[in-house]
Amino acid sequence: MTANTELLLGVNVDHVATLRQVRGVPYPSPLRAAEIVEQAGGDGITIHLREDRRHIQDADVEIIKQRSRLPLNLEMAATSEMQGIALRIKPAECCLVPEKREELTTEGGLDVSKQVAFLSDYCRQLSEAGISASLFIDPDPEQIDCASEIGAAIIELHTGAYADAHQPEAAEQELRRLAAGVERGKKNGLRVNAGHGLHYDNVQPVAAIPDILCLNIGHAIVAEALMSGMFQAVVRMKQLMAVARRKD
Ligand code: PXP
Image 1: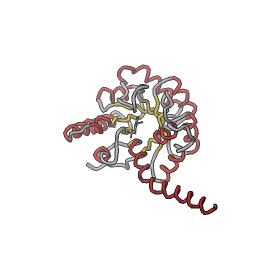
Image 2: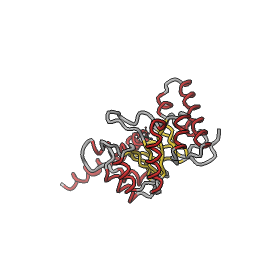
Image 3: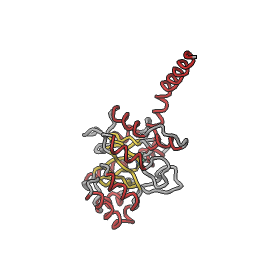
Image 4: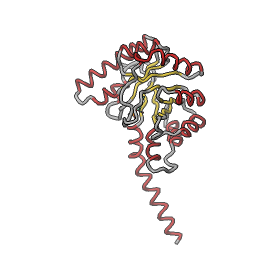
């Protein structure tokens, strides 16, 4: 299978903010991470403003929208508070996700079929403001059809079941579901993205599915950035300490 267009990478910088929030300090900065993503050739910035503000804060959304030149994909629950923020900030895309306070990360896709009228209205208001409405859903034919029925511009297919599949046959089955979901979404006139739980060892079979436009990846990239940057971080601290000693 060869993909026929360039596959874009949206980098989710939420966990840069997680590291900052656990210490209540101003660093590390999600904006600085977004700037490095741009320099490295990333195609978009994804951030999830959760209702409990556990990582990304309102001020992060503001400053990343103002200062990053990459398109911003704002993930959020479909609440009126979040809609107000989105309509004011105007990210390029808003990805609506289900949100539970007790979850560690977004656990499942949105059940679009149970809230067709509500989500139609919600997405219409976003698109009237020039924001592409995206729905984070499982690769389920009913959900995909409902997403196009309600007028969403984009679906992001949840790759979590694929990422969690431990047996090769189960992973293959999930890949087939994803590929069929991409095809169905495309036939319905939707732009199709995918993401969740993708990492350096499992991304390629998903990346090879033709017609996915963008993969949104966060945790694995932030984790790898820690390891890739650890050497330089230690060298820099040692240098500062040595210079201070020489001044004595
Ligand atoms: N897409 C959506 C809709 C998400 O909620 C998340 C997690 O915030 C991601 C992609 C990125 O997932 P991960 O951090 O596992 O790469």
